[in-house]
Figure 1 (cartoon, helix red, strand yellow):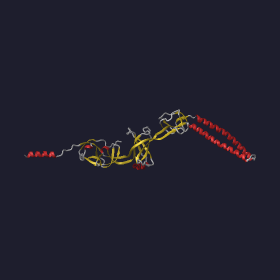
Figure 2 (tube, rainbow, N blue to C red):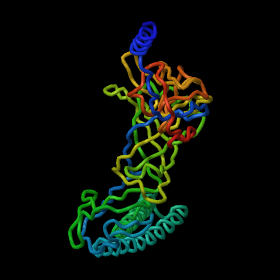
Figure 3 (cartoon, rainbow, N blue to C red):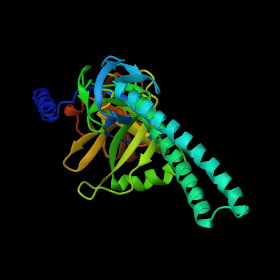
Figure 4 (cartoon, rainbow, N blue to C red):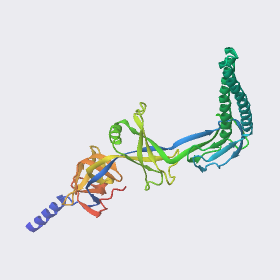
Length: 363
């Protein structure tokens, strides 16, 4: 009877004892500490370094176009030729007037010199002497006007040949060969300077004070990332900060300058922009997938030496690539769970199935 009772009591005790929880398979990573960049990420728009709209300074027929649409042209390269025959005739006319007045002026000067000698000798009256002197000065002054007319006529001939004022890429040809153009009215083509080139972007006013403080003393790097080429950032420098905050958005406009030697940046293109403002030393980093969000805020699961987990509330400082910098909650060297959190509760046993490279920042 005692043996039967003892067996029954043992079975009852085993039934009452809770079943041991099996370990949860998880992936983990080690908390690291290093210097990280403090960056601002936003969207930017590529702008030409300079945009020139080419117009004719004279009216006439467009008789020759020396480039094709979309060509890269150099400063001083001829782009257009306007019919110059009318202006060449005006040059000849102005030169003829100059020659005529020069002859008249020479004769008047000779008369003035003769009458000056006669006046000294008392042969002619002062009035006649003064009239000859005035006539000579008037014709001498007309020579200046004639020379200006010749120079202006020659300038009109020069204006018939239109040259590129900058190095840049031409756009759509707006007036075809054979058409008449008006003086300072008809746009012929636009030229965008793309070497170097700007990327314009805006940052919140709360970030600007730190940017402005460092911008005054150093060249802040700016990276532009073209869609589909995120692994190949284009490096430039911050070169412009607007003189006022936009009151409607609370942001301020900045510009970075890029050499753009490979032509990956094109006017009008939207790019992702990363402005590096400064660095943070001794930052505590965990993989971004380690940080979870719960009812009480953000937390991580820390693996303790006895292979159970502890839930820790953390404070996120900033994202750095595929990692997150934490202001509090964990210490360097601790182990955090990066995959398998959905099956975890505090003090749950775990089994590590994979440990990725903890030092990679994913950038």
